[in-house]
Image 1 (cartoon, helix red, strand yellow):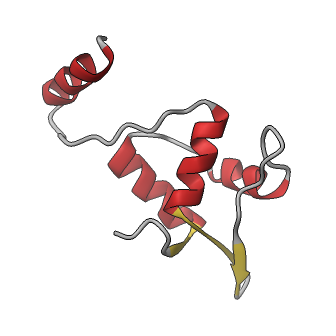
Image 2: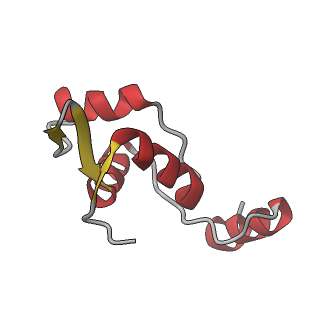
Length: 90
């Protein structure tokens, strides 16, 4: 999937949870769009009453907030644990 494709906030949440293992609440996306964090606001556009943004914008805000995204390549819990141990020494 292209990172600059616009998706509704609820679809972005599911995509981020599935691919990166980051669990965000929808209110977080609205807060990042409105108030922002550390002087930066997430770019978003309202189309037909729904808010849309891109995966790249959400991941950028996630990094600004201190959440480092990790793409999970495996769904098996032991494989995920091994991947995290290799990448972060956990």
